[in-house]
Image (tube, rainbow, N blue to C red; front, side):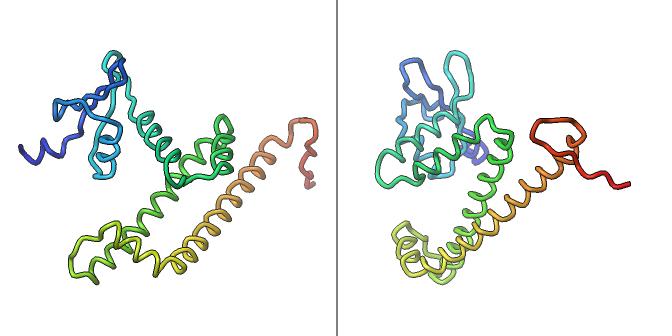
Length: 187
């Protein structure tokens, strides 16, 4: 198989009977197999076999739901409730972008630690067990660094929100909305 074809995005079809069919391997696969594709960083798209609608996000959300139900959940009920509150809110698009950038920043930090640790291990692969050991030793430092990053990110988000509010007040201040005081006219 050529490397170009091997690196091509996989197409997975979801049939009405809820079965998933991998067109690359010409076989039915499970949600666990799709999870493994994610873990292996394989590019794929899941489509409805009849309508050809893209179902990739819903399959990924289903994997997250199963992971949250089993083992140790990543999201607290409070965080999930906050995320739900942003749906339909004027800040929904900004929140999605904010979360995506923060997850990417966390991934970048993890990759940096992994590459630094891999250099110390003379090219040996950095297994999940080794990552666990590394985190047990470096955990407090990493936690402090992440807390600082989160605090800075939170402050930036709050500043951005305050700036948007003041710009909105300046822009709409001339209109007689109930409960809003008009800006001071400087003459």
